[in-house]
Image: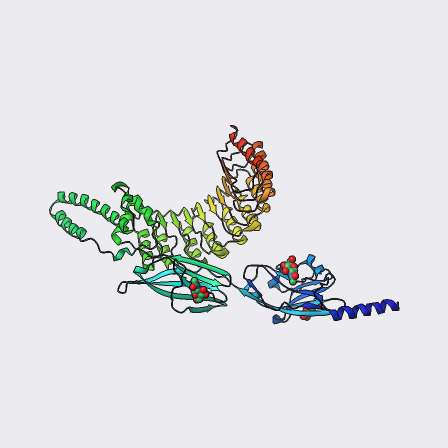
Length: 617
Ligand SMILES: *[C@@H]1O[C@H](CO)[C@@H](O)[C@H](O)[C@H]1NC(C)=O
Ligand SMILES: *[C@@H]1O[C@H](CO)[C@@H](O)[C@H](O)[C@H]1NC(C)=O
Ligand SMILES: *[C@@H]1O[C@H](CO)[C@@H](O)[C@H](O)[C@H]1NC(C)=O
């Protein structure tokens, strides 16, 4: 008995004097939304040899919040009943690492509130020790925005504005030209809102030195940029005097002689065509590429697609509108241009059916102007492209109100490459759920969406008589949990979605099982599915094949390029396609590590007259 007591004491002394919690020294920096490991480990003080922490209690607290509990691991398990709510479900210790003395804390989905001090306290039977670690949280805000603020016709200078919002700490904001050289800009104007920074910088450039300019926000290793290239300022070009004389002459003739009027109209038509050709020359179209009279309008429209800043003269604008019903706008439109557009949309006999405002900066005031036009009962717009317009979740509320208008004509809306975040989609889905919404195609590629948006979009798909046929969600970090939610919508009997793009959404085999279940529902409307650039692997394809084998599945196009599929997955696909009268006509397996045997089987399948497969990559 006595020996045991002595032994314990000796052990106690040995351990208590020689063990410690290691101080990591420097603070930990993490980006909001990401995951971080707060490092903490125990070791014997003499030397680096580690010590097992399996039997120790690990107590992570926030000393700056009155030692509130972040995570407690005691008696070999997590005891988080008294954890502060802000950390619920976001903390973990690495249980397999405890034997190496690693008592680090993993914190997921970092929030701004998480910034502060963290105390790592370790208690063993014989000793206790603690260290405090500081966590700093960085916020990568909106992509910066660059816009033409004004053009001063006296000095012939453009004033450009570069702006970044919602970063923390303050990012470095730079203006660069196409060669990547720094441009001298005014001092940054800094605004603090809540704990975030909005930074603005202006610079001016002469019209003879126009180039592509980049507005770049940098914070540590994070870099976001946006470019603009103001070029054609068509208002500045004088109207040809020939035309003026001709118009004056023609007006006089009309008054006197109707016959001469006819001559005038013929003349005007020729003049219009000349004007269009002149515009093309001004846009730099080489002489030999210039079209004949009949195709001049189509060619010009194609050209205008590539012109970054275009302020067309009123007459030309009217001409383009009346002839084509399509207006393409270059980058850098001003608020005034939006007022003009709004009036064009709401004019009594507006013919405008397609509007492409991509790559313009749409701030709230501009969107409000545009929406005035869209709200008009005269508006006939069916297709609206707002790709890469730097707009935000507030704008989504305005657009949602347009979608739910009684006489809404909008069928197609592309909002790709805008930082909508989940909150933007939440606003938008309110409009999409309206019984008056007629939208058939929705583009939300690269909009920084996650699982939360999927739940909202699923609820849109479940609405009775849902008109949505095509949905593009590519390049968003939806993950398996997002697709799981989306599939709730896809399985609904009200869902009529025919085309779904989920390429590059960080999906794995788990999503395949959910998608397969959506393909198996009775009368499944899905015809095209793009799952490219996700690490589905053979196991994922196997799951997906369960769906393909179902007689309810009418899928016609399946894209699986770059999905880490090998011969095994390929064989699985082939048997699935053989076992059931498949409707699949197009299969894309590009950029997968297929061997010769897989390719052979596919080719055999394609050549089999009983199968419909026509296109195979
Ligand atoms: C503890 O283990 C985790 C997970 O393996 C690792 O990320 C971290 O760097 C380790 N920390 C220390 C201090 O060894
Ligand atoms: C955890 O640590 C805090 C402060 O260091 C202390 O108030 C609290 O009692 C500890 N909890 C346990 C279960 O050890
Ligand atoms: C531009 O200036 C910033 C400082 O404002 C500097 O950090 C950066 O390296 C410069 N870049 C180039 C290409 O000169």
